Image (cartoon, rainbow, N blue to C red; front, side):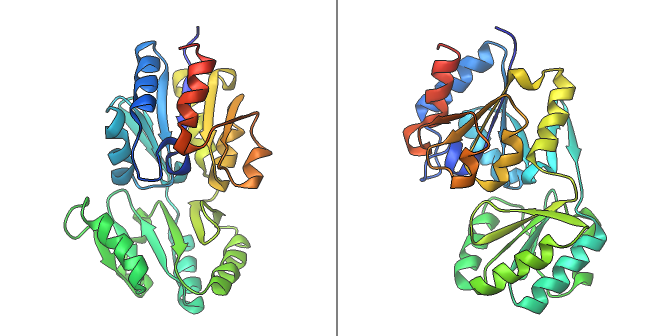
Length: 266
């Protein structure tokens, strides 16, 4: 069998709800790697958090992180930036609407979070990052805007989140997506998981006909359309099924491993 590329979302796809990779899934992916196939995790998480999941499998797994703004290409890494103008617009909008945002660089998180539940999430993130890698801001001048790759708006009144979604969606300086109804993911204009997948396909000279993609959320849709073997998890949001050729079991049922076992006749 020809060498294949395999792209797998993390949350709701690769891992169980308790944030673990099952022994079955690990075993299947390592068997495919041994056969010469190339495995990628493709996630909205920043790199340090994606590496935690990668290391549950092995370090030969490649990464697309930050929703496509960063991607491994052999020993090198591609990176895209949100842009100073877009960052300034985002900060002005979230401050005006009273919602929370986290802006990511490759190794730093800037946030304006004040809600306790959101701060607890930040506290967890801080445990696996270098000291000082997470900082609070109020104004644009307090961050290194040119280094921001992507961001996420989450936290605040639901109605204001929806208003913010409409305003951000009308901007021509960035793109938005979502991994859950209550968040807005911020991406460089024209960048998403699919653009990263295409960079990888070009690098390895492996076409879409030999590309498998697994996902469950809105931010996976573009990626699902970049591979001929597109697989939606049973626990996907309704719109995802329209963009996938196949459906497998839920993340709790090891749906990724289930499909790969059948497809590659393991």
